[in-house]
Length: 270
Image (cartoon, rainbow, N blue to C red; front, top):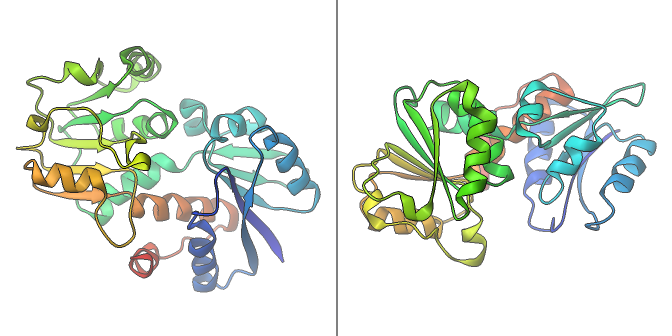
């Protein structure tokens, strides 16, 4: 049986085993998928051990995505752009190929699942960490009017602008530099929700927005960011569960060559 897994720390909360088992059942793929807790200083060793035991592919989650990019024998263009890898494909000769499916996962959830138009829209992204870096290139491929990246540390946001400037219109600022800014779509890529907080931005940003999207998710109820945004006047709020399932589907396709139905999986997780 072909063996797959997700590696991270922490990992007990991961929905990936449930998602990929549903994909395998749907598509009649004979495979196993498990969650592996990896010590923060033991990532490379864990991957090589997995490959040596015959493992065929891995999903990589926090905090190892940048290490996975460095470990991979070669990477897709989108992974090189992101400088982060969330999917490893093990080839017969032992070559480990890295890819990043986060951006395409977000794009499919926004555009296909929720019918949101990104072309000529002003997009505000909150945060400048690895999660955000992986989605900038795919978002720019939809030709928005501009993307502004706001971060607690403006310098980190500016680094992303420099890295992706050749792909489209980008600007950067601190959270305190958003006064008077009007976005059509706001995407929360911060980790504030992990501690029950929201990003330190003005409530005035939300009235008039078409949609807000939290890359975090709760299965049964809106996230804190969604609730706050709606209370402040956002017309529509979405969470990142669809992105999680869509990025998993892209990884599954890279491994198995077949595309699963994501809608049934999203519904069952809810």
